[in-house]
Image 1: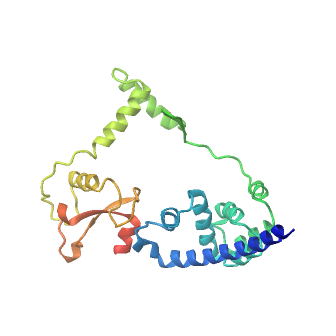
Image 2 (image 1 turned 60 degrees about the vertical axis):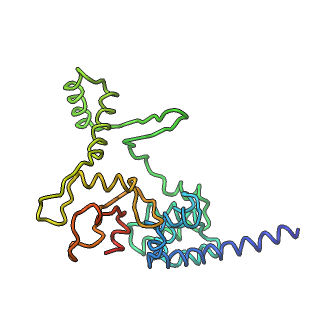
Length: 255
C-alpha cells in the first residue's frame, strides 16, 4: 500500500530530523544563546521560543543534557533503538551515574517501549509532602509533616487557639509573609556597604517589575535577584533608578 510506504519513509525522516533538532539544541544549550533572546533557560526557550508543550520540552531538554556526555544516543534515536520518551525516563535515573553506567543502562533499554522502560526503573513511590489538586473554584492541598514538624504546628495552634483554627492559622501566616513584601516606603540607606539593599527598597523594585525578570523578553518569576544596572565596582549606587530585577540566569549572563 503506497500510503503505508510513504509513512514509513516519513517516519525514518522524522527520526533524522529529531536528531538534527537535538544537535541544534545542544549548540543552543552550550552557547546559552537563548539568554540573549530573553529566555532564562533552554526549557523556557523550548516552551516560549519554539512553542513546545512543557512535557515535550522536558523530553528534549533531558535528551540534550544526556547526549552531552553520551552523544551516541543521537545515532540510536536515528535508528529507532531509543525514543525521546524512553531516554527521558532513563535520564531521571542515570543522570548522576558515570558515562559507562549510562551507556550500559541505555543499551539495556534499546527497543523497549516507554511502558517497559518505566517498569524497568520501577521503584517504591516517594513520600509526597505536598499534593495539590485543582478544581473549578478551589484548590485542595494535602500537607504531610514528619512528627517533629507536626508537634511544632500543634504547639503554634495551641498558642494561637484564641484567634485561629488550623485553616485560619495557615492563611494568616501566608498573609503575614506576603505583607513583608508590600512595605515599599523607604529612605536612602545609611549603610556604607554599596551592595546592601534595604528590604523596603527591594520590595519596591520587585513590585515595579511585577515580580518578573526585567530582561527583554524574559518572563521568569523564580530565582529573582536585585541587580545593579551600573555595577558597584564601577561606582553604581543602591538607588531605585540603578536597580532592576533579573533572574539568576540573566544576572549570571550580565556578569
